[in-house]
Length: 308
Picture (cartoon, rainbow, N blue to C red):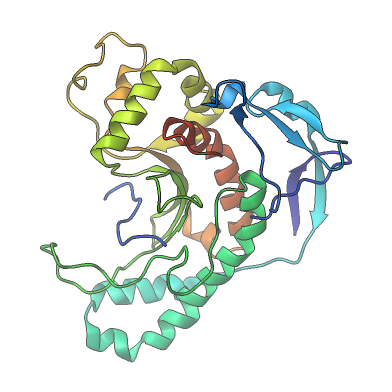
């Protein structure tokens, strides 16, 4: 298999880089790059940043979101061993679990879960560590079985009317390193029969975070439009979640981004076929999706005063 990667010519980019039970679902390093204006310590917008790459003073500068970025990149082909993670047995297990969602059945089939779903997903998360670190040194792909990127299969039924104990889907959230301090956007991957997708953003943000994002959006429309209204973004991604039926209080109903200001969630992504999930194309597809949605994640990080 040939994997196409964007790399910086003759430069080395130093970029080595626990979800909750809620699902970011449509239905439901060593080098750190400084991105702060030292004169006033203001968090720079994505379109304002100049990022330094390279070592020993031999790096170069680029505008992190401008078209000029592409002039510093070239595409090379790296021949790699084909890697598959999931198989038709993965989806068969999930369908069987949906039809037999009880503790006795799961106990009898736990080894199936581990063999065809959990362990392959953890391997995929491990293999995403390097590519994700190249997108942002502040995001983590954590392959721990407990407390890592992979969501628990057990449902939190304490306040739910649906008391079935297990999730018939599997998901992983790739979180910001400071997610325990600040509600942060994340990258997300979802595996489920006929409903696989990848993307990112902030799903069901708390009221204070939502107000902060809306205020930032109202004051900085140009960078948001550049991140989310390009033809490439609109043709590939869809926004997830509901919107208000009327403009939020305190915002101009005639604002050019009023449709975005009315969103209750700021998350977007793209679905892919089960056949992709069970092929050696899964890893490249997920990496490419994360790269393409990253300008929106970058913007949302700026809105909540986080580095990207």
